[in-house]
Image 1 (spheres, rainbow, N blue to C red):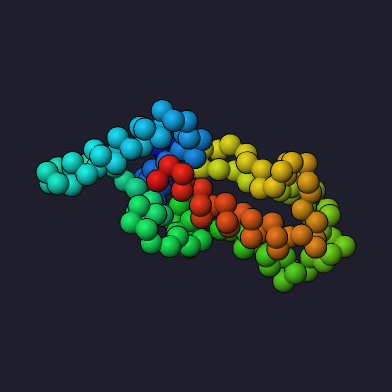
Image 2: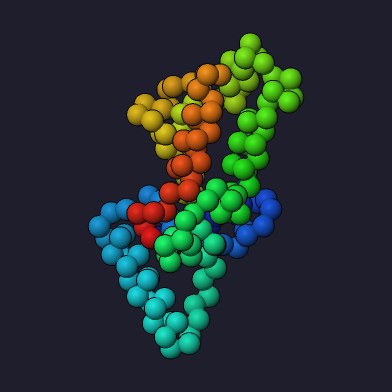
Length: 156
């Protein structure tokens, strides 16, 4: 039902002790289990018996209806933060449009992303077979951010 955050999986940075909803837990039974977890949390709050459950800011913000930003994702997924930052600033490292195909090939850059449970998810239909071209790199960055910000929306 819950999975450790990406920082735990990658053993980097802060918030390694946090848990997030498993984005693949979307069956009717799993959604009922999330509903029960919410009821259990409510009982714990009302009876002043805290649960030993470490949930990140992105979870709480969605739960109370606050807008989630990519900064919330960065708190629990430093690898994605660094990956996107490095790719967005490749020109500063001397990478040109002519160099991009080789770089994208070495990185295996296609229109997919790894979700919180470690599974690959297409960002567009057939994304696993669509290479990220120089002209489409900003669209790729936008799609990754959009996916990561809303990854747990269905479960919360």
